[in-house]
Length: 231
Ligand code: DX5
Ligand code: ZN
Image 1: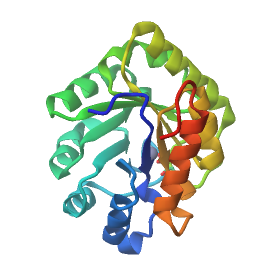
Image 2 (image 1 turned 45 degrees about the vertical axis):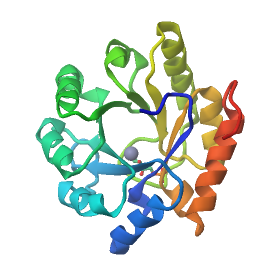
Image 3 (image 1 turned 90 degrees about the horizontal axis):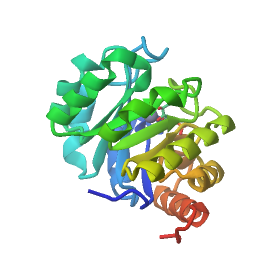
Image 4 (image 1 turned 30 degrees about the horizontal axis):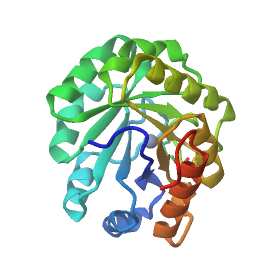
């Protein structure tokens, strides 16, 4: 398992050309990025619909990257097993689901997958705090989820700082991921605040040379990260 601190780049397939998803997934596999971020939207938790386990299953044989499934879904409990079987390596659920969160964490763990917990911009960090010891990553949403191509919400930087402070204080090892409006400049700002995992859709896919864009984001984030040299 990768230790936190190392910078990971996770292109989000939501920004890919949907007429050529297989080719796009293979392009990401050749880009030097570590994770392929797969956004699952159900039309309830967020006002948009993306794709389901069948698409993830079809993409799975095309590359060996970590498949990072982000469930923006009102009832993720019915989707955990299907996405696990389809090839998810890690699954992230939202802390806004409240009382269900501990059960969801346990179910993901029992399927042998890594656990992520996401928090939306308007949600208080206090809702995340009770779960920190049982997650592999905290996902700080830096836009309101549902759509790619939105502007980064700068107020979320303090949440990243809070997640990093809790991690240090408690000696925990979770990753701090950011998602939404992440491009070169905002990735550097998030890295300076303590983020180590950068999910980016349009910020990477907008570049014809995806490999160069991944390398540049990694370099800028590494240079901005506190106490870390660029990789
Ligand atoms: C937003 C999704 C993101 C999305 C990011 O609801 O969770 O993963 O793909 O897209 P960009 O990077 O374009 O903001
Ligand atoms: Zn996402």
